[in-house]
Image (cartoon, rainbow, N blue to C red; front, side, top):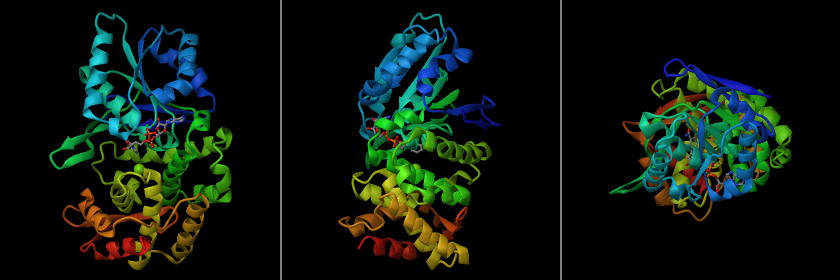
Length: 373
Ligand code: NAD
Ligand code: MG
């Protein structure tokens, strides 16, 4: 089974394994027994994922000798990555924890919304109890379950702000079962593929070549085919996290390739456009801006065309109609990375990206407007 070790220097643990293996959910109990035998298990999930994979996980825990877990289900959707649901989880944890002699263990079964929210609750309850991420979307496997960023969206007087409240806390382990992707909505699978393409553009031209070889196959949710690709994505994320655990050294900012433009269209669409769809669009914009800023190498210009071909083959729309241009341009200006000047992550060629500071926003706005017509 591919296992990526996340190595840490600053956290209270020296690191944790990310296991990626088809059918892993059925073996989770045995795997967890080694480290957590005798623990009381509290599982956070949502009704959809619980219905699809809850029984398999519960049977596997039973096989691993765990006593019956307590399930806490959160309503599905980003809307519920909220303070209200966070409070409800804490209340349920407190009620469950009362008088239990055994050590607690929290399992997070679901996508990125669930992992961020439930992980934040586990990391802050009694200043932190152990938790394990069991990501069930492609995005959460390659991105959100690794790296220890947790949190919720929060209502401010100016409206709801994504990921405004949260913390860093690393899981004890991540168990990713690519078989779980079989039940994922194709649009969600594709959305996750955008983050994988992003990783390849950032760090790994050979990975990009693998992705472009058979885009149709990527969309089939074939676990054996996806497993090594997910492992490659996780390895890159783990490497960045190991070097910049708390996002203080400016390395993790690279992971925002395509996100500055992406966030702008995502927000302006009222989140009708999925995150990965927005990131795919954003990467196309980043390519345009890199070109107009003269950053692309000679090979980079050809690479930019390859990126377009791959993203279109995956079904991403790289020109978007029907969004209000002023709203998108305003959203671009609001992006937090613009405080004290505009900073973009831009490609020079496949596998080589840089942060690029710009005094003015106009060139970026020009690139964006051109793709919104
Ligand atoms: P999500 O968690 O909303 O999942 C998408 C949909 O798929 C949901 O309806 C979910 O119930 C459903 N689903 C999950 N697993 C399924 C399965 N196996 N079969 C069928 N349906 C399934 O969305 P996401 O894309 O996984 O995560 C997005 C969230 O991740 C955002 O809140 C974002 O802020 C966060 N995120 C966090 C980090 C981080 O570092 N912590 C990084 C990237 C994104
Ligand atoms: Mg992202």
